[in-house]
Every structure is written in structure tokens, then in C-alpha cells.
Length: 314
Length: 94
Image 1: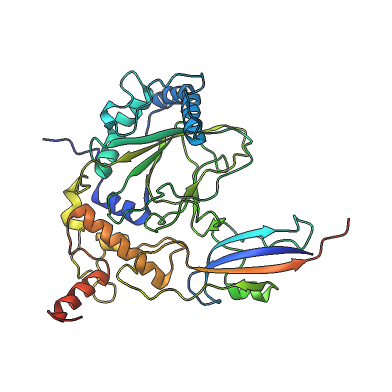
Image 2: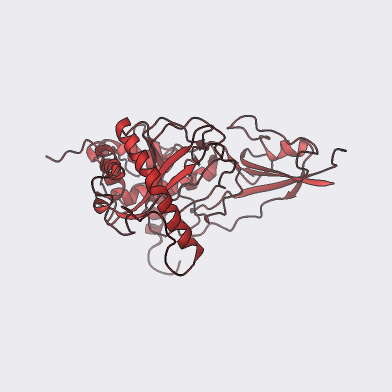
């Protein structure tokens, strides 16, 4: 029998759909954190050099510097990235990490890109809020981005700022730069070995690091290569997955997916928040393959009404 | 004379609706009136746009009426209800 112990639960998947991220504190053991951190320091100059070369638009060969050792090309199947011996490869193949990846984008997604984000102690400037997605397709299929912190990050130590629940908004990459503060935003801090998993659309920004400790983070983006349907441990799906009658103004469920998708972020208020629920319901339909799923009847009402119209001009 | 700007994003289009995001810019570089400070990570400097008016900020821009909701109307973009306020301040001598 297949071991599904490391896959995410239905409840965790619903939380991801609602919040746009999942957090796993101290997931990676310390010995592996230390080895990965060492490898990150070794790979960082080469990754930076290649990114600067690409962004500069210059022709000609890369300037001399560290080799492109072990750095995968985009579209490489994940299982071929960072072959042993590689501590970063070991992190990506760590059973709990592999289970998270498989649940969200399948067991062997495509490598998109990765980068090593180093914020030296005392770095005064942070990034503006932005979203990495750039182009937001109509389809529900999504990428994930893993943010792995091999060392502890203290509060105020340059941890990533992010806005829970922002991932289903359609925004230009830096159109959101002017939001200096959003009620309910988070600034990451946490123990060594923590993993954040973001939906591609989550608003985020690197922060200044006034602390005395350098901040290191490894970020990797992964593309699904097949439908992201029921890839997680669905043992609890029948108990949690609700039918379209789960409706706040009629008969709301309690321990249902709809109830989790109703949980709004502090900046999502009142009627505006219902549009968020509709987007979440649409994403849950994609993930479960259930076209009738709904939260608070908004999409079902339209379907019922369309049935009443019949043929003829509308 | 210098300009100070306060952006408030409110939960609804009404000026007395709750603030959900904010930004401040100080053209006086700290040499004019002190900018209002946030009342904690969850609390903007003003709880509503009206509270900013009551504290002496002048409204510079209010959001336009949104487009009617069409087939794709449930899809949200950037924060919708952006109000921009200004305060013109004299520079402190010296």
C-alpha cells in the first residue's frame, strides 16, 4: 500500500486555498540545515552572476566567476535537479517536503527557477510589495514557491513580508508597491529549517535587516506538469467536502471545506470578502474536480438561474 | 511649504468605512508636523477616512465608481477603495 503519510490533508489544502500559503516550522533537521546553508553560500555567487547577466541584456559570454555547478535549467523535472550529493537536493527530497510538493503540484513538477536570497546584517533597504506571477492566466492551475530558511530568523531580522489571502487577486507585479502596510500582513520570523509554501500569486517583499545576523533563504518555483486534482491525502475529503447547500444564510456547515474558505484575512471585509470566497470556491472546484462545489451559494445561484432562462434571447 | 501624503485603503467606498491598508510620505523629511504613527501592526494611524479628516487631513482623491459587475466581476484586483489625503506644512526654522 502506498505511503500517504507525508502528503497534505484536505484541511491543509483548504487552508492553502484560503490563505495562499502554508508554514512548516523547523521541518528540516539541523544537520541538514547546516549542510544546505553551506551549499547555499557556495552557489549564491554563481546564481547572482547569471541573473545579473540575464537581466542586463548584454551579449557575449558570462563574465568569469564561479561555475554553474549543480544549477538546473528551467523545465528540468524536479527529480533530476540537484542530484546526490547535494544538501539542497536532500532538502527537496526530504519526505515531508516531497509530500508537500506532491500534494500541490504533483510528484515530479518542472523546475522553473531558484535563487538564494541573502540579506546581510544591517541591510537598510527592503523591497516594495510585489507579486512574482507577472502574468495571471485565466485557468486555475498554479505554481508554488518554496521559501526555505536554513537558519533561525529573529523578529525584525529580514524575514519575508507577505499578505495572507492576497494570492487570488489579479495584480500587476509592482502595481501593489504602494501598500506600505496592510492590516493582517505578516513578517516572517521562525526557527531554523522552516519552510513557507506560497501560491505564485501571494503578495510579498524582502525586508531590511537591521539585525546583527545575515539572513539566508532559498526560494524555488515549481510548475505542475499535470492536473492538480486530488493529489493530496484525500482520506478526510469525504468528511470535509461539502455540497452546494453549505450556505451561511441558510444551513452553514461547521467542519467543512466551505467553512474554512469563509475565513477571511483581516484586510478582507464584509461584502468585498464574498468575492474572495467565490475565487476560492473556483480553485477548490479545480482541485477536487467537482464542478458543483460552492461556498455560500454565489456560483450555484447563477447556475440555477441559467436553468430557468431556457432557449431564446437573453 | 511642503506636502505630506496619507494613503488610506478602506473596506468600502464610504469615507467612514474601516481602513485596511495605509501608506505615508513626508515631503518635509521630518521637519514639519509629525506624521501620525500606526497604533500597532494591525491598526492603521486612522481607523477610517473620516477620522483622518477630523485630524486635519484634506482629501485629495477619492476612488471612482467601479464598473458594473459583469461575467468576470467577481475577480478582484488591487485594493479598490483608495483615498489620498494631503497636509501642507511649514518647515520648522533652522
